[in-house]
Length: 464
Image 1 (cartoon, one colour):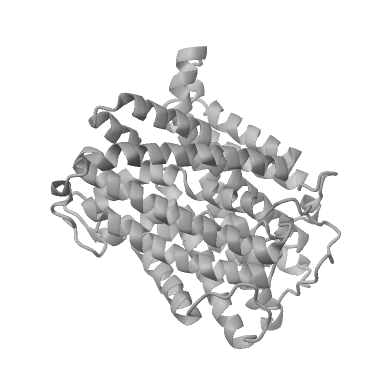
Image 2 (tube, rainbow, N blue to C red; image 1 turned 30 degrees about the horizontal axis):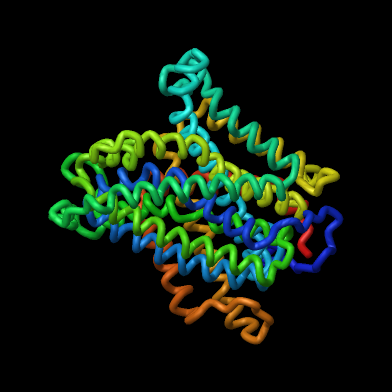
């Protein structure tokens, strides 16, 4: 049984009947990564993080960014060694074995589904007031049942639009994505330019009012720098979506490493600048837990036009996050279906080289989540799934450094045992810093996944 549970997959170039078209260059991949990373995280979670850590939320950004940067280096090395679709799932299948690969793939399905649904609901929150004012759309049709509505139609609609883009062509979708990413970057640059001149060191005192480690406050809220980092971690991941594009990169050896490392460096710099500008502009208590903290800060500074511009930019550009994670979700599904772990019929490609059935199926699943299901604290499950994937990729890199130290690597992570160690230990610590309820739901999800594996996937898997 152990041999079959941990059988490893062989990567044979162009051996599959269902092959994705190579249409993406490194600029598309950098834009895909930045599009996934820069989104609801920095636009909303800086307020949640400030509530948990105070001005030390800046340190939370640094810690989460450091862990993600180390994981990104591991991803870049593995992506150039194994330039195949599937990201962490494929690396785990090739290096560790089928059972671990299934758990990682199952976790990625959870992560991407929740992120796509959550961002769609977040986008609807910005768009709903405009639709109500301009088109008189009833509020009941723009909110889920948990908020007293019937269905969140704007969230479903934006998912349908993004799915249509992906069905048409990934290259054209990536070009539109690159344009919208530029809109987001300009909006954040405007925020920094307006807020930074108002920086007041007095707003940083006391710097860490809730301490470093996660602990339960007297009000029943978990606080501390690491509690904030465990949530802010959501704002950094997304570069892993680039690794799912390996089969569609024109020059994987060059494009993947530029896309992964380039997007991560750009986003760490952007986030630190935004966090410093935000915390220094006004007291953190004035924007903590605000659903629109950056716009609120601009209004508090007497800049309503800049605040309005930021809000409009969010409505225009947030779909780039949906596109990047929707793309990653469909490619994980596609690869697992091609491997026989999910129904093989889902791996069918269109004449344009896009996975039609899996994209439509994914759209239906995430639309139901966005339209009807209350996400609430379950959104933290996306973090749990990502932490599992990041840990697996970092372990895979370290195993391959020991198992095949001389294997060709067009990108080599510097100080691999330090980088890999920081990524693995950091991810484990962040997972332990997540709410206990989140950890429990993640365990339940994976128990269900193991049932699917043993009852369906294991006997149908085609390794190699």
